[in-house]
Length: 211
Image (tube, rainbow, N blue to C red; front, side):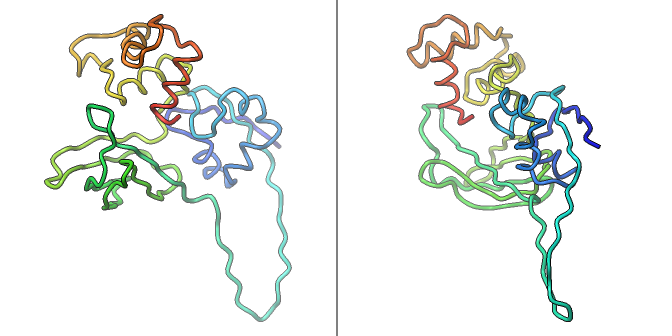
C-alpha cells in the first residue's frame, strides 16, 4: 500500500528511491507525486517537509534460459556530480588540479576549459570536500543534497553565498537579510535593485548558479 515519506535535509528523490528500492525516475514520474514535481521542477532539490509518495512495488519478470549464466545489473546506484569553479572575477578556473573527497572516496583530476569537473558518485552521498591548486592548499567543504529550492530564503542565500555574494556573518562580519543580499546581486548584474526575487533576478540567479 502506498505511503508518505517526509523529506529531511540532505535528501533527494534519488536517495529516497535508493532507500526504498526504486529508481529515481519511477518515484519522480509516479502520478501520486505529480504536484511535488510541478512545485519543485527538479528531483535533485527538495525542501525539508516535502512529502514523497512511495508507491507499491511492481514485480518484473524475465524469461531466461536454464543451465546458463545470466548477469543482472542494479540501476539507480550512481549519479553524476557537476561542479563549476570560477575566480573572483567570475572567470572559469580552467585546468585546475583538484582532489575530490566524497564520503571518504578520493577522486583526482583537473577541471576542463570551463572550470567544470564531472564525477560519478554514489547516490545518497552526504558530505565531502574539494581541495584545489598545485599545493592543494585551498579546501572547500561540500554538503550534498542540502541546497534548498531557489524560491526559499535559505535557497536564495545559499546560492548567493556560493557565488561570492557574502551573506554569512561568519564570513562577511555582517548579517544580510534576503532582500539586502538580493540587492547586492542585482547591483552586480545590472538588474533593478528591488531586493525581490522577481522573474529577471531568478532567471539570472539560476543562470549564474546552474540550478
